[in-house]
Length: 145
Length: 158
Picture 1: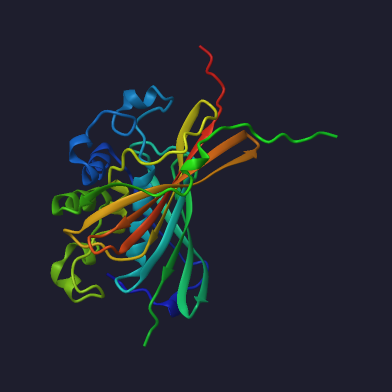
Picture 2 (picture 1 turned 90 degrees about the vertical axis):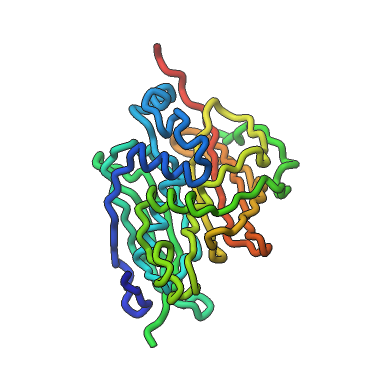
């Protein structure tokens, strides 16, 4: 895993991860919390249940999207980076099998109380040209010695 | 001249800021494995015992996102009465410490706030619930906030 250093980061830097969520991933995600209810048919696992609330097919839990955004940021920062916070707003539903791209954009680098801190925008894009998820993250990176 | 009217909604204000213990969960290895599969995590801090031992935390840690999977039922609610539909509109996580495999996480929750916003598409009422996650040593390892939005949607035509 590559280590990211504060000195090497500039506003405008961008990175991304493609993601095609499916039912198996959603079930595994839910099983991490409660294996007994992971496969329960509902809007997150069952197309018919999702259609009953007006969705074309099963949708991805919002908490799962937060966790994927977290993964993208923590992969980028490296082992000695620290994720302080991350937040996301859910603008549109994400459907199973959507071709998503999770993107992060450095918006600022600053000394926050002497801590080398990076602000990021994080957002998801789908194949319909929408941004179903938008948010921000705050990361502290090590300095080069 | 028109006067803008404040949206009318009801909620239980006595629930605001009242922290309630809602349960605990052990971070079991098989649950961690499920999480790593779901998210495709390959970070050696979470997956490689030797690499993690040589890293900044001196051993394996668990992605903080696993806290988002914990079933937290029966927590406090402000019982918002507004509109005919509610959905999850946002999630925030502040990471304050490391989570280790085998940790026991105790969860307490409160309703942080209830507020209304009126925009192009009408009025929405937000209820923000805050969860604090403490480990078996009493350290707060994370705080998360979950926003639910209540709104009125037009009835569908048959």
